[in-house]
Length: 151
Image (tube, rainbow, N blue to C red; front, side, top):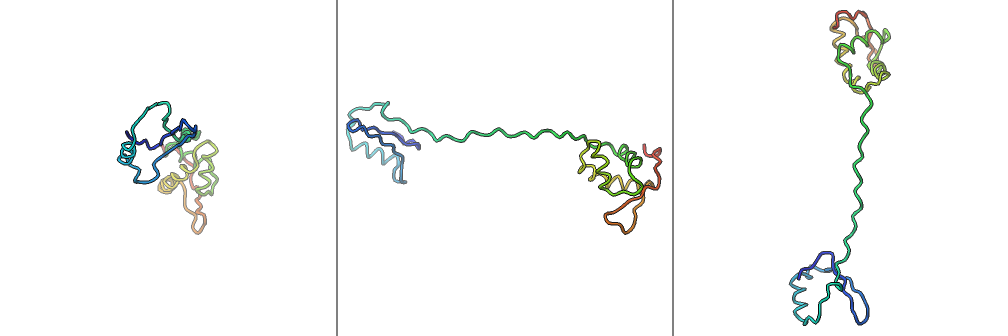
């Protein structure tokens, strides 16, 4: 005989009382149950009278919510970004202006801003923009809007 961790329901036929039992102490081991039953002569066993207690119901698992895929477009390649920045930005601009410019077209503003540092360095190297000293946030000025040498 083995003890189920869920316990048992025992019905006293004479009084009609129902006992639900589970091990209460560490001493309530398999050996203890066997010793207990060895002290008695089994008169009759009815499987319908000894029922395992019902298992505790686990709360139903919620399906993992799937995040809707971003409607944002991937960022354009550097040449496309440079051309758009030189043609569509005002003469003086900040990095935030670059993010705003591309966000209007459905691009992810954060990704654009992360890449705009590279764009600014490239455009400064190509003498298309200059950094305006002493401005906070940093401002840049377009000195040439010619895009023919970018591609």
